Image 1 (tube, rainbow, N blue to C red):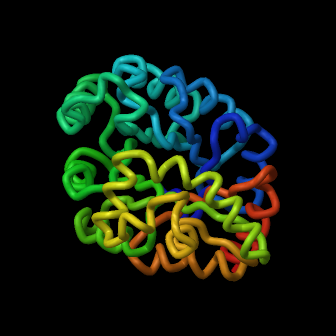
Image 2 (image 1 turned 60 degrees about the horizontal axis):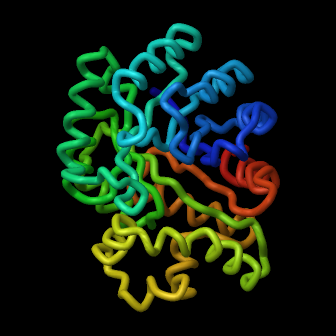
Image 3 (image 1 turned 45 degrees about the vertical axis):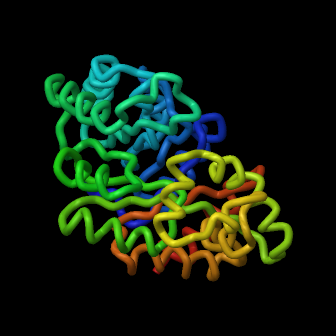
Length: 273
């Protein structure tokens, strides 16, 4: 699927038809529906129905919450109504949110087996992937990987693991504000909860961050690395760093009460040329 080099990533409650239409008008290639959307994927249907060409992707359907048969049926329903415009992102979330979280790697394998059996094409699904084992599985069993809460350094390592010809679409948080203190406060309010979750914490330690960087809401250096902030040009350079490191597509998640200013400013900085 051709989803361009830039998309928007928003939680389902923040993502309505008006934002979807504006993203399409501005030239974004994909809308990523975040927050573990339900397996019936009703909101995907709504967003596709409100637009004409833009791809809608899930970031991500949680394998513990919705069985593969339900998700596969939703995929085929959407494909029948909006052929070629839906990319299914699936993953296992984090252990703190799932009491059944045991043998997670085997869970992914079994779930992909069931998607295969239900006729969901490999090229129309991506895996939430951070570590090398799941990145290799994304290379073998999916169109590619959708890492969350990462940096260009992780993107470079992920590309090496995925190899060529596989989609690499990292999520990137942004705050459109030239006031560093305000931007960091907004960023930390979102990032802090992730720093207490095992999978994200382990990944950041694997990438060379110290425990001290992850404690007490995150060091300023970590916050600045995980959440791009400043004027549109500053943020655009950080997004371009992911692309230079091997990403095919960056999913921009604007933080703050209104995502539209950042969506519009980054479109002008990155998509208007």
